[in-house]
Structures are given as C-alpha cells and as structure tokens.
Length: 503
Image (tube, rainbow, N blue to C red; front, side, top):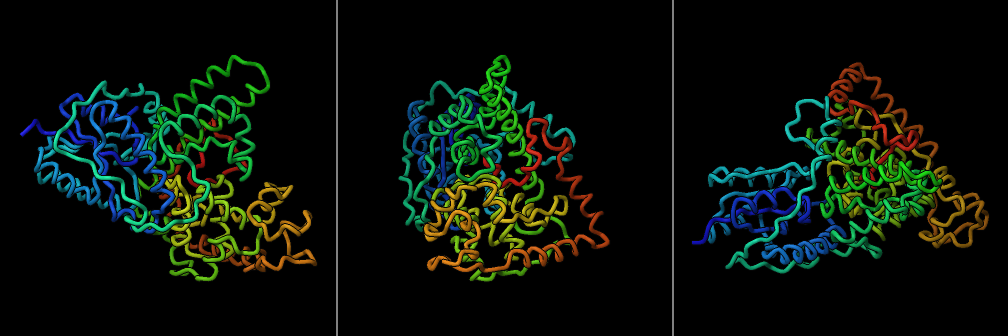
C-alpha cells in the first residue's frame, strides 16, 4: 500500500490561495484534495438550486487549479464519514485537514460525526481557522483586535506541486434533479468561481465602489455600487484575509491622492473595511450559540408569534404579491437574481415579522434559499435582529411605502419588477390604491400597514416590559455584543439593518 494520505476536506473554502490546511498538509506527505457532495445537506430546508449552481461553478475552477498543481480534486457523493472510511481502507489516511466551519445545524451534527469517526480510527483532524471567528471563545473582550491580527497575517501561498494519487477516481458533479433540487427561478444568477470573485474585488477597489456608502441602500444602484463579493466570501473562493488586505492596501494608496474621486472612494472603502469586521462578528454569534438558528435568543420573546405561518400571507410575501409595490419588487428581484441590497433585506424581513406577524424561522428559511450568498451565521443572527427577538437591538419596523419613495423615487426599480403597474402614474406608483384607475392585475394590500405596525409594537414592547427582561438582555449583550461599538471604519449611522452583510 502507498504512503497514507493527508486528506484535505474542502467545504466553504473553494480555493487554493490562502488555504492553510492545503499548504500545511502538503508539508507532511501526499495530499488528497476532497470535496463531498452531501445529499442530506441539500435536502435541508435552507438549501437551494441557486446555491448549488454557484458552488458547481466554483468546484469546476477549483478542480482546474488543483489539476494544475498535479493532483485533481476528488469529488464524491455520499456522507463524509462513508467517503473517508472508503479512502482509509483503500489507501490509508495519515491525517484529515480542513478549515473550521460555522454552518447550519445539519453541518454541525455532521462535523461531530466526523470527529467521532476520527477518534475511533486514531486519526488527527486538524481544523484551522479560516477568518475571524473564534471557536470555544471565552469572552468577546479583545475580539476585534484579534480579528485585525488574524487578517494581518501573511497570505498563504498554495503548494508548488502535489504528487498525483493513483487509484482514486472522482465522480461527476450531480445535477439539480439528482440532488432533489427544483429550478427556483434564478434567471440572472451571479457567476461563481475564484476569478469572478477577484474581478469583482479588483473593480470595486479600482473605482466601482466610489459611491458605495450612498448606493448600498438602494436596490437598483447597489447592484453595481456594492462589491457583490458576499457569495464568494460565503463559499470561500476569496479569503477574508485577501479581501481585507487588498482593501487596506488600496486605502493606503488613496491616502496620498487629493482628487475628489479618490477621496470619495477612500471614504467608501473605510466603510467597507468596517463591514468586513461585521461579517465575522455576526458569524461569531452562531458559533457561540448554535441554537440561534432555531430558537429566539431572548427567553422573554419566545412564543410571541404563531408556530406555523399563515399559508396565504407567506405565499403572498414570498412571491411578491402583497399589494405593496416596492416590497413586491424587492421579493421578485431577489427570486430572479439571488441578491438584494442590505437595507432591503432588512426591510422584507421586518415586514414579514411585524406587519404579517409570521414566524421568523419560516420566513428566514425562504430567504436563506433565495440568497446565493447564504451564510448561516450572519443570516440567522440578522433574521432574529430584524424580527426583534434578540433583546439587545432596537426595534426596527420599516415602512415599505416610505422606503419606496426614498430608494426608488423615479419608480425605475418598481416598474422593472412589477410590470402590472405600468399604467399607474408616477405619483401613485408606491401607493397604487390611491389611483382611481387601479391596476387590475395587481393585488390589493393584504394587510393595513399602519394597523399591523401598531399591533406588533404592542406585542413586542409588552414582552420587553417583563420583569426579567433587562437582566436577560444584559447576559445576552455580555456574550454577543461588540466591545468597541460599530467599528470606526463603518459609520453608517442610520443604516444599521444588515442581512448577509451584502458586501
């Protein structure tokens, strides 16, 4: 039998650059790069076709990069334990290497099963930190400074070469149908793969991000004004360390330039740098409290909403048929593209949680499937934040009509995604119920926003007056709160609602 292998298990880190498990494993012996397509994971209610299609593109490119090093990526379909055991029996395994992952509850249970298998076999599993999230963190004190130190470490080069491993063939990537995934209507998907991610980062830093601070709140302008790097960070084609260091380098260069365009870009990149901190800050919450995915963070806020969603309200919200044009345009745009800017992500969640009084877990799962950049740690932290269940954040109930006037004053975004309103004059576009001519193909409002906002406030603030509320909030803040407030770079004082951070 040949020398036992060092298996490098790729998960949410689909690259060879700044991949420390790969670089470290290559120093110890022959390496087998492995990706396991797990049917059980893709049957989870937060998984979707758009996510798999993005990942498949990333895997194609990763495979080519590894092939260039000498050893292709081995793709197998099944459970990780079964795949690893088969490799152990046929070739032997010296050690398992991977990045730490803060995933959903399913991947957490899977990782525990892998750890148990490794212990039984007497094999070391080296899990290395990928970004600023700390496993088994005792205190949040010093977290931000530790993030800075971690991101300042040298970027790790890939191995010069990998010796080929004979006798282990890769399986083809399964189709959507083979994974039980239905086409989900994403007709304008974002391109996957590392090169696409680097192109986005380069163009954003070169000047595309000049108006980031202003345009990130707008669903139309944000599509180009935001970096759009979030799915590449979520699935690891670009490392957080790479994004942070590239941003810092560009900021240093811009500091010496005095032109207005350079000053505007520098101001935007200062904000962007702060949001890179927030990416890991929110993932840390789920790492420290995995139940956040399933249960309200604050005990006094449990059981406020129904256990099951009203099917008609849920369907109207999910498909963009609520009778509120700007919200409906956001939901339809998200369905078609897999992306929505940060403020609108917060708004659609707020409307579902407060005005429709739907359970956040069900609406959160729908949005998880819609977001190509779904990152469980950020997602569930933000779903709870926008639903008012953390007990440590201000209650934010967005007026979807006001947001329409503020963010789409000319109605360009609404007219693109809600064509039924083509004949409604501009002055009535955000409130078509005030137009005498009506819009025969567009639904009536499913709720009265003023009345439902008042009712939601009564319920939420009533629960917050509970005698033990403040004490429990203090404990939550001590465990999960930032120790330095909003990072000095981030400063969007009125722009505090984020979902997936929309980098």
